[in-house]
Image 1: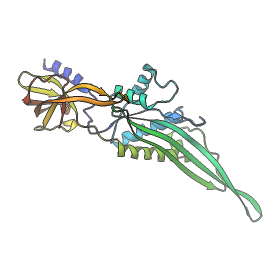
Image 2: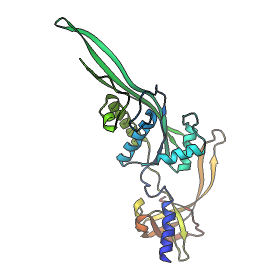
Image 3: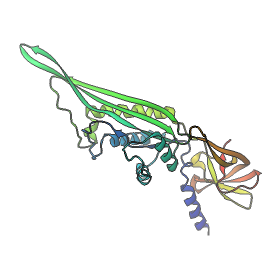
Image 4: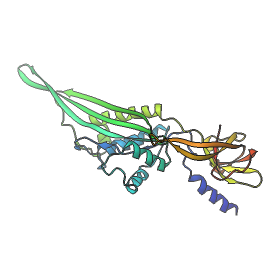
Length: 300
């Protein structure tokens, strides 16, 4: 019987995405729209927009500061909901899909410049005409970060990077790449990396961690409850937490944006035990009655 209950609770707990990494902002990164001339392709066959989005996801994961949602699930919802048929994601669709995914933020945008431009300066050495060539790699992307709960834009910026190289002889810049190393060592690859790094810095600055939130998954007759947050989410034995019941979502009649939900405090609990390897906690009820599965648990 205990094994059955353990399996049952593990299913419940792993299904709630907001808790296990509650201290990290949850973000969905959409494929950037490609507004360039489509002359460049990544080594895996993707275009510039999808390629830069992939690089950004990798950089965010490596930073260790975000929980980045799986791109396959984003694309699945885009297909199922028939969003983005024109190839562009809007502020409204990003917020709506972000809610379906259970993230805090949605990042989308467009690559507006990607490639090389060439210039040159004439000269003479010992009567011999030469040309000093110069190549500039240019990468520019417009990015927007949306709070999916309110639909508001947190920031909207254009990131533009240039890398230059000049000399008496320069190879023709490549328009396609055999592998990641080939791309990373190219002039346009270096400009792209600088653009990605700047976007990550902006996200670190503007995307704040979610407020601690958990939910009651079971109410026992002995005056205790089990919540779907444990030591993995920073919950400690002895912590006093507050239980709330969410009411109706309020929508602004002028803007159509969510103003939030009415929330009423219904009691207080105290953590007594860490469960399921830190994925849940048991707590005793110290004030309040009528707790139900799904009631919201917060620190304040």
